[in-house]
Structures are given as C-alpha cells and as structure tokens.
Length: 66
Image 1 (cartoon, rainbow, N blue to C red):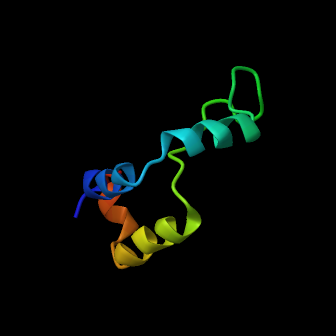
Image 2 (image 1 turned 90 degrees about the vertical axis):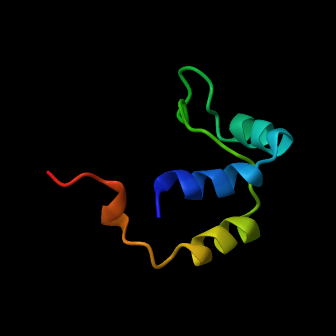
C-alpha cells in the first residue's frame, strides 16, 4: 500500500468549489495564518470513510527509515 493510492482516493472526492470557500474561510492567502494549507473540499463523512478504509496501514511505511 502506498501513499499515492490514498491520495488518489482523496482526489477522486475533491470538490473545487467547496475547497475555494474553505481556503478563504481558513485564511490560506499569502501572509495569512493558514498560508500554504491546501483544501480538497472533501466532506467529513467521506474523509472518515477513507480513514476507515486505510486505518490498518502502518504509518512507518510512508516514511523512509533513518
């Protein structure tokens, strides 16, 4: 299981209109407190479905060992 599979699942659910609204609400513009944050506009119930689907994946699989 790889990081790209999870992000692909998330990108399938993205909602650009909602992401735009959330970006403005959370002040993600240059110099604002949320600068650099990225929103996909995925509703919480769908985010939870993805989390549930991949909850057994070991997080260390996504980071190279030092």
